[in-house]
Amino acid sequence: MQKILMVCLGNICRSPLAEGILQSKVNSNIVSVDSAGTAAYHIGKLPDGRSIEVAQKHGIDITKQRARKFVVKDFDEFDIIFAMDDSNYQNILSLARNNTDEQKVRMILNETHPTKNLSVPDPYYGGNEGFENVYKMLDEACDIIADNLS
Ligand code: 4NP
Image (tube, rainbow, N blue to C red; front, side):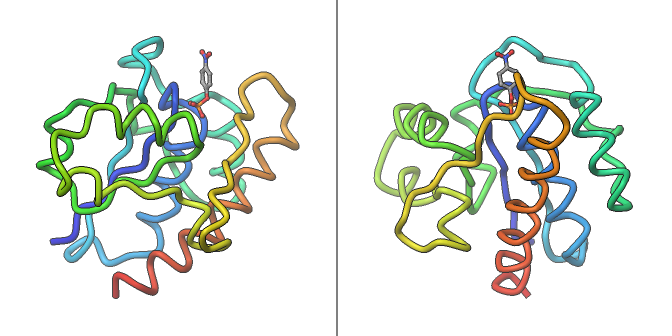
């Protein structure tokens, strides 16, 4: 089993979408996907309604998800940890205990734009277009991730 973790700040907008999208593209007997946030603000909450809506529009149900915080033990649990943005990336790396932990952490948009270290924009304070834009970026990245995992 390959275990993939998607990480953003609140675990209510971007990483729940990334989790749902990748899950929809892989065989669940071979790949498991989870998500977490680097901040504790929204622990236990459902994804943001705008993420739920854009996912639903594309046939993906993310309403079973609940927000949780990233913990150091996630380095032991997961094979690859995808950060949505630069600040998530730095926050995760700051918790790494060794080189093995560090090497698990990647910027998700490097899948579509190798070595550019681009960030998935935080859509929290914007409108619905922001969520559609994030969906598209994550969908393209997850196509590549899924291909590489199968
Ligand atoms: P996310 O978006 O990191 O994609 O889940 C955010 C959600 C909540 C906040 C910021 C970003 N917030 O400040 O509460």
